[in-house]
Image (cartoon, rainbow, N blue to C red; front, side):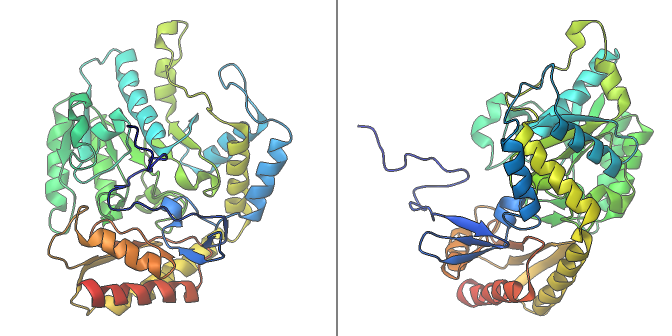
Length: 421
């Protein structure tokens, strides 16, 4: 008999312990609304994508205007104004060494594109020995086969191990281990067979909101540069102001060879992603030999409506007060985290820009900690969307969040410690 209890199979959801989904009817600013009018504070920006707030007026108007003109066109052999506006805007906001923009539609796919660009580059210039990819322990880069391969091996991808290619890792540069990370990277790059090093700059997201310094990021880039290894910055989560600057690499004065941006690129309104690269990488694929074509696409590459949303977002960054609102949110997060500095029920209290995280001491720790689902339900009952990574509670709200919003959040975190620590 066909089981029709769960006709919709939800992502990262174990339906056996979460049989009911909370229906959302509307959203505005930092809040979601259920059909019965219940207001829920979106403390994780709906999986880290919503930057300015839900239904930001300029972005929504741009979507409406574009839908009246052009909804979709194949991007192979064609172009359109919204895509050109996004490309021009990105190239003016990113390092001068990044000269080409390749569109895709999600964080996973833009990282997959980056990996293919890197490997294609070395193959096309004749350095066929460079095939190894170096990654950082505890990293997460997506859920396609390629992006799972460069992420931490574990609960997220164990069933798919036969499909994944081998990579080599360096230790996460936690306090006291930074030099070991650099030494390991140096030794690997010196071997001469490394194509690229891929890293989440400053904050490892799904790996537990693990944070490291701009100095380490700079040192890793210097090692790659010394050995001619391509440096891929996966800024899917940390880009668009999350770390306090437009892009995380800015804080280390790092210019990546390949950069991946998604999530906040449309302010969280539409799916879109881009991969930017240096001219040398594009040039390696530029040839009258059609076999050197960069063979990657999706049907909706550079969808005009999504690009219109992104173009409106870029205008907000150029002309609006986004940076002031980010600075205000950073300061508020710092103040609220200080509440827990002497609370022995928590450990590893940390912040990078607008991202705040702390670990609730529990009998079992990590992503599968038994306290994770209980914390989620505890917060949901208090009209808060917080989705702990096991025993790690993090707060990553939209930039329009107010002090009263964060009052609710941090009061609930303290109450959760009373209940579960």
